[in-house]
Amino acid sequence: MTQTVAAPVADRPAAAAPPGPRRRPRLALSDAVLAWVGPLLMTLLGGGLRAWRLGSPRELVFDEVYYVKEAASYLQFGYERAQTRVPSGSPDPFVAGRTDIFSGGAEFVVHPPVGKWMIALGEWAVPGDPVGWRLSAMLCGTLSILMVGRIAHRLFGSGLLATVASLLLAVDGLHLVLSRTGILDIFVMFWALAAFGCLLLDRDRARARLLLSPVAVAGAGAGRGTATRLGPWLGVRPWRVAAVVCLVLCTGVKWSGIYVAAVLLTLSVGWDVMARRQAGVRRWVLAGTLRDGVQAFVTSAVLLPAGYVVTWAGWLATGGGYDRQWAATRPAAPGWAWMPDALRSLWHYHAEMWHFHLGLQTPHPYMSNPWSWPVLGRPTAFFYAKHTDGHRGCHLPACSEAVEALGNPFLWWAGTLALAVLMWRWVLARDHRAGAVLAGAAAGWLPWFLYQQRTIFAFYAVAFVPWIVLAVTYCLGLFLGPPGAGPPGTGPPDRRRRDRALLIGAYLLLTVLTCWFFAPVLTARVVPHGDWLLRMWMPGWI
Image (tube, rainbow, N blue to C red; front, side):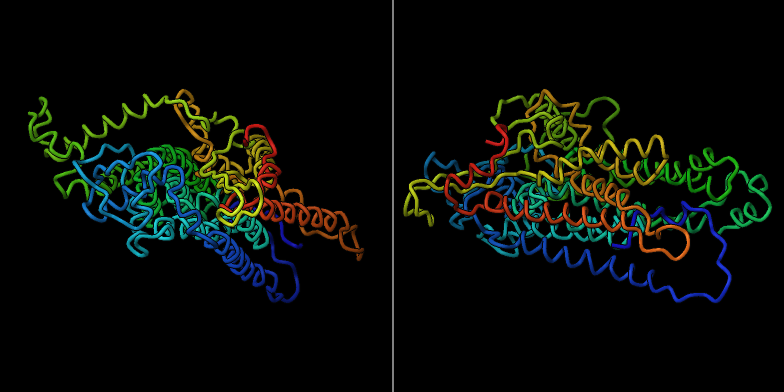
């Protein structure tokens, strides 16, 4: 292994070129190729795991009973309609392929429409089949494996570490299960990761433009004190706009996307401030705040609310959605007469949703505290069925068929330690790459501590699993060290680095084997009941 964590080019001072003829950059070329080929291969691996037996089980799994049917209602009506109640113990007609299950009026729902529209796209492509209602989740989960690898390469400058990051996400059990289930949280993760990637591209483009500007040239040639006070305005920034669109879609899946938007956009402005400092701008804090922060605020303040309203287009364009006609029978409050009735109704609907979320305290056997999520204290059982001899391929007195939303233990337990290492690196070593990874993890995890009194579940952690992967990848790069040689002179290669590479390879092999070991209880395979118990390592997993 010859790659390691490398600071982005803009973070390192320029070094003088060595004397002698210029060498052909073979290593740079091979790294660029590996940075694409490695993540693509891992994406094929992860995509195969996620597509294999995608239609199993044929039953609606956990919250699929809500979101999948609501998505089907979107295809027929453009909004959620109430469903015909299925008597307890009776087969669900929807599972049998029937879509005439909607009767009565509109149904009150508590999540925005984007995730359900995404599920609906799969149902439209493959109607009446579990593959259809899980197809969009599988595609987004698979694509995110490639995305995390490319993001790792942009952060760490190593094709090898990019491949490692994609591999770790491909073999994580929580990500695997959510990529095979027609519920919303995989889409929160997908759009948050896409926004993070867009902001990284925006950061690198902004840095390049600043470092090539006359300000940076003047500062480098005559000293930092001669540079202008604020530096240049960077103009329209399409990658930041793309990031805001992704954050709109993230918030349009679940409101938790609001926290992701706040953290990532603040991180982006922080990058701008540091970029102006590196370019030699004298008042770099003021410059980053005025020239970049104000623009970012205006862009997000316009696009986020306007885009979010657009995500409700189906509800707005039809007349039968829940509370759609609320404002038509109620006069506007003083000062609000200018607002169209449709938007007043939408505002009231959101107030009802907000009150529901605040009061959601129904006990559930799989509810968990956010403190336990990184250590897998109480994973969520999405599906469990016990079979007897002769049923569903069981040839023993007792068999189990399960879908456990359980992360790869050796990824998550290592990730818990890695977050502590990143905190140290960010605070003491001032490594901004560590801060970026911590920001992504914090955006998906820390807000849930505000709602510990609510009924919340560990599978919400899928929203920040890419940043757990990036944290572990970062620490593996630190452990490996730079690709230096041995003692001065013409000595043998660094044996310690080779030994560390072997240890890293052993760890990666362990995570792959762990995924293989847990695969039966992640993908609803019918196994002997004893085999299921063998995989329940902790009391909280049962």
